[in-house]
Length: 203
Image 1 (cartoon, rainbow, N blue to C red):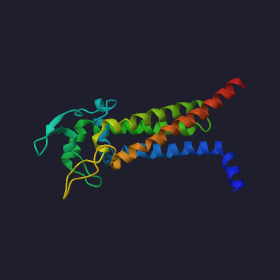
Image 2 (image 1 turned 135 degrees about the horizontal axis):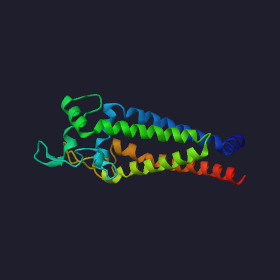
Image 3 (image 1 turned 90 degrees about the vertical axis):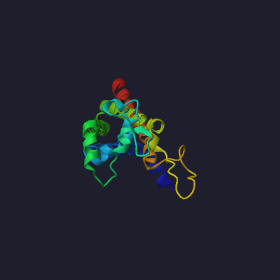
Image 4 (image 1 turned 45 degrees about the vertical axis):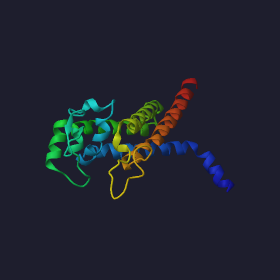
């Protein structure tokens, strides 16, 4: 047991490098998926309701009437379920700028991942990457405040739904919440890079 403890205690630098690699894998994979329509469709509720990002969409705040005569945001009528594509929905998203924005966002995410990975060899680049990771995670976590879809809706059923709204996270909400780990990871790699920068500066 002592050997394991000593191994873990002495491996901090390698573990921080592993953290950098992990952040890169997540960023590259998720960022790369932004080039595909299903992923671009999936982030629409998050973007359309965000004060930081909604202006990228043409019709983010457009209000329309749904089948029940209720006023809702237009995007709610054009959702594509994963694994199913509807032509009229795709055309709406093309006009909305959904896919163009997703391509740009994906490029940014992959770039941040690369900056974090390069921090293994280049502390200054890694420092910037770490801070950008923190910032990106901050924006993502803000969706917990701005996006209704991150919480379980009250859709009724055979009997009243007992768990809906805050704090009952939907599938999307549970994924968003995990970004608090990415936020802390960004600070850790940024801090490690900062130490190396200072060490070289005062060496």
